[in-house]
Length: 225
Image (tube, rainbow, N blue to C red):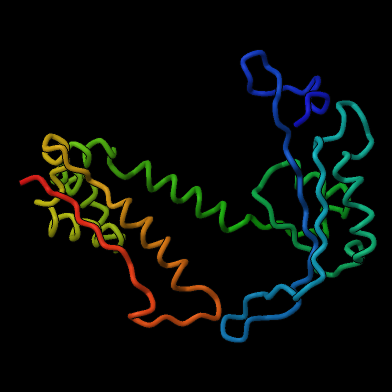
């Protein structure tokens, strides 16, 4: 942000000042259709109305006036008929200010709130990471220790069972401490980036490739004996 746009704004810099601000975004759309097989709601094509504001989402302390974001959103909500909608659903990451703003605009009794699935899965992923052993054990070549720690969960989760099986089948290939001592790399980043690079080249929209039309450069790496 420009300096004059962050004057007086608290931030995370050493002196307590801010260098950035948050952009608040709301998108209004209708989802009246249904997916034939699953019955899941389908967003109507077109008709999305975004409303964005770089400012505080909360009203000033001690003030009864609505927040700047609510004032920005309300005219568009009126234009789109949200105040008269029979089913109004607000999907968010669960932030309290979002709920307060929508209850302020539309009335708490007629608004249904839903937690965004992406954020739900994100927290589940963090929980799984907390259960999973420290990456340092794998780096040190202690694959057997990792198997012992996660194996109790294999009866409940097929993903854990698959992980244990994969590690057991490849345990001799997971001596990463030995690889480092020998000056060997332990990641296939070069190959993965190559897959992306050549994939973009060979999968361009509307193109077809033949074996002779897509020559690729090959390379070899010397492995320590």
